[in-house]
Image (cartoon, rainbow, N blue to C red; front, side, top):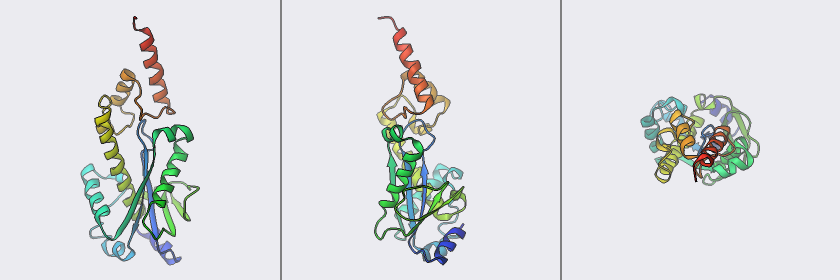
Length: 219
């Protein structure tokens, strides 16, 4: 999973970042992006050693993600940062633009020196602070992007578990804000809470239903 990294290195790129996001699809919570830069020698030496098994975060178990997260964020050979956009921003500018903002923030938050190139999962992202290459399914094709996907996913899951303590009626620790049947039932029963994305249709429908129910209650 180093073909894209090798190509960038051969073109003179030295400070190479992988970028990915977590949380575009959920009905609640922020979208979180991570940017991650490996020391080149460490990445080459450990791709079949310490880093063996790193993959698209969706293909890993929660236990595997946590193990790799601790390895990546605790290594002196890895620079990393996260950026996010909260539900209010998502509702204001839409989820696609908010995701792009979160990616740009993650790259900008990396420790100096800044990256000179980024490998980004998915389609091209405008407005990044450095040149980039978009790679469809990049989290399964680039080790740098896969590692970033793990950091983004674990970070967001922890955020949603914390929100579960603040808003216990919705089960955020279990479904992380995705539109599961449990989450939908809670939305219909209680209406949206402050971290729900009101621009998303299921949340709008739940809000209308909840308001209708409230109006039908006898005074």
